[in-house]
Structures are given as structure tokens and as C-alpha cells.
Image (cartoon, rainbow, N blue to C red; front, side, top):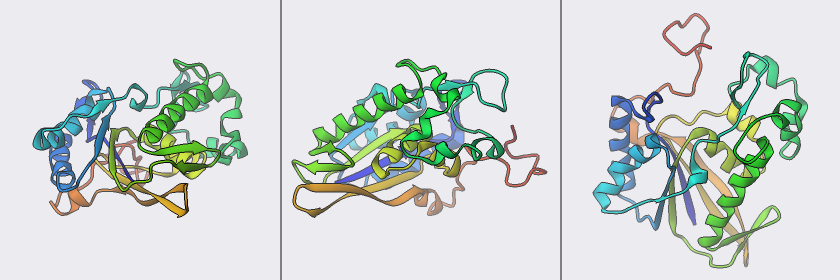
Length: 247
């Protein structure tokens, strides 16, 4: 099975939709996705993800199933660099890299600030466990049942599944599939708007499957159209680049 995780287009967060550039990116993404044989589409309930999916779905005459858990990872903490509660990622490097547990795929959520974090389902770990639990239910619907750190291929297939969602949520899913702390992914990766991350199942022994990522944050659909990727989610390359994002 092929799993394709798509980040929404360049966002206008003030209206939970896309910027003019984001709409253009979404249309170019459709040029790419409409060439594929896609078994099922899933989408976040947030407007920017649904708008990104709209071009592809309209051209194909298809619908996407809306999944609440695919919204942006909804977790807030009191980060060391800000006075009030803030989003879980975007810590300053000099703060988060000092915490050894943040590099551990199991112990990353043990930090006091994460235990004091607020989510709909409790602390940060509770939200994470809810998301990956729902994700595993989706994968089981498509033939792959989680068992420990692997998947039982109960109905092995070569279907393609597309998820339109968000960068923070994408890192949660990848951390679960690949066994990596999400803190490392949130702070060490950047999936540009409308980028596509692709994973395939591998069934090297009968009935036992795992996922291998073959591409992260692929924006080749923008490249072929001479459309540069948006800067969203990145910070300034050099501090004196005043036209780039600072915090």
C-alpha cells in the first residue's frame, strides 16, 4: 500500500484558508494527483486542508472522508521562550536540544511542560495517543493491523491512500510509523505547503508489514511549473534576512 501525506497549501491562518499562492499550489498539486489511481481520500476538517483538496476532488468527481483527528495537532504548552501558552513546536534550538528525553521515541512526552500541556483529551501524550490510535484504525480499515512495532498484513494490497492534512499532524503520523520522537521531526523537518510525503508498506515475510518512507516533503509538482515553494513553517535562513520569518 502506498500512503501519501499532503500538507495544505500556503495558508492564510486568519481565515483558515489559502493565500492566492496557496490556491495556485493546490491547483498544481491536482495536476499531479489526478494522474494517479487513488483508492481513497481523507481530509482534515480545517478549511485550509479542505481547500487544498478541492481542486483534485472536483476534477476527479470524488469526495474525501473528513476525519476529526486529522486536524492540526491541537496541543498547547508554556514554552520557555514565550510568556503564555503556545504551540508545541517552534521551540528555540538552545532550549529543546538540552532535553535528552526529547530525542527518545517513548520518553519525549515525559517533560513537565508537556505533562502540563492542554489538549481536548488531556495532556500532550493523551492527544498523541488519541491521534495515532485513530490513525491505526484507518490503516486497519485498509488491511494493516498494528501489532507492537509492526503491522499485520491482513489484507495486503497496493492501493494508494491520500491524506490532506497539516505539518504538525504529519510529524505525529511519521513518528508513529517510523519510531521517531515527534519532537525531533517537528523541529528538524519542514514540509512545504502542498508537499507530498510518500510511504510504502513492505511485506518481506508473509503477513508482516512495515512502512518505509521514499520521499518527504516532495514539491516536484511546483518545480515543473516554475513555482517556488512557499516559506511557510521555516524561519529566517540568516538572522539579518529581515524579509524572512523571525520570532
